Amino acid sequence: QVQLVESGGGLVQPGGSLRLSCAASGSIFSIVHMGWYRQAPGKQRELVARITSFGSTMYADSVKGRFTISRDSAKNTVYLQMNSLKPEDTAVYYCNGYIRTTRVGDYWGQGTQVTVSS
Image 1 (cartoon, rainbow, N blue to C red):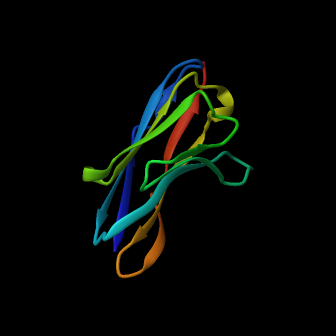
Image 2 (tube, rainbow, N blue to C red):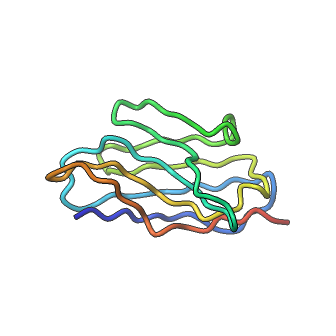
């Protein structure tokens, strides 16, 4: 099995920064891609950013230029650096991984709360 453990959420003022981390562990053969989703109250979960095993990245339009996704392949860890945070970035952020063990599967972390408020 695979476990994804997130850390780094919290309360920050508008314009501030936070860095989220997500470490994958377990019987991992390879990681196809990992990314971050978020879900605000009353809204659907949305993809924020994703990074592939080749290092290709993609971002939601709403975070381009403000958020940066990166990875440490040796540690099976992905990071989300969030700068210039806005109140509308407030949400529960979930780590997601498309990971191969004996087969390829979709895995999720437990979520971490990010609140942007003065």
